[in-house]
Length: 321
Image 1 (cartoon, rainbow, N blue to C red):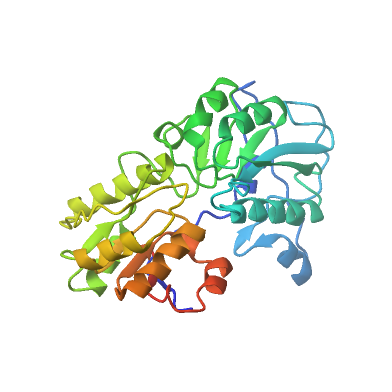
Image 2 (image 1 turned 60 degrees about the horizontal axis):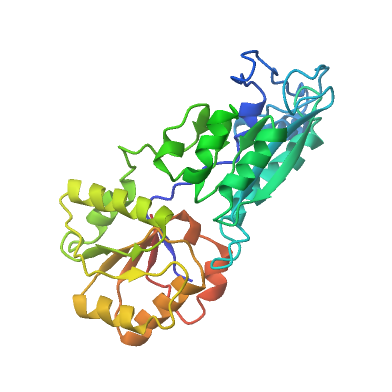
């Protein structure tokens, strides 16, 4: 598969470090101080590092049920994704998998100051984020590394129960600008990282004249698309407005949309959609229609799932922005 990266953004699972030195608004008291193993030799140094960063994990003697989700020997965090969404099975499952791996990695070093991390994994399945948040509010110290596409519906519950979050990503404007939130790659409502479009403009001489955005009936996708369209206009790129809008629940046939893309003469199609059967069908239909646009897609497309699908070359024009 020929996937080209033109500025990949990814939120790391290093959010675990925030748990090691966090203050919550539930009590206003510093809960935990991070502790790492004293690295005497090469092996210890390797175990106590994540890349070049010192690990916040290690043995210690922390005691006390100092907050919800905190006991003498455990810290309970919540995490998860939308993997159970029927229209896009496995949606954002990488988010949950990454945090699960980080929990195991940290606990192998002794936890955080001696407290092992216990993770409650949630599946919001796209439509159940509010329900998941209310459940988390009852039992977790904080949310770490989660990715819920419909976080906008859940945010009021998180704020009401004063649940801190180190979000893997945010979508809704209230979640993006919410209190008690720490985010590796912030997504404020009034700003957007335009590194991808800027690089695309330098790579492709006709980018300004032949770029369009793929529309969707999904509120979450629409939020992202609107921000991208606004940013493109700010760069002097006027989307072609071919009017290609996909039903989030899927289409009976994608050929009409493929023909529309071909007739409009789209050279570059920007999309905030995640890789799912519907998106794969669209790209395959575009290939059958004889069109050959380049696709500017988000980091979720840089995956084994996409590589395994792309046996016929329909995704060879993908660029991950």
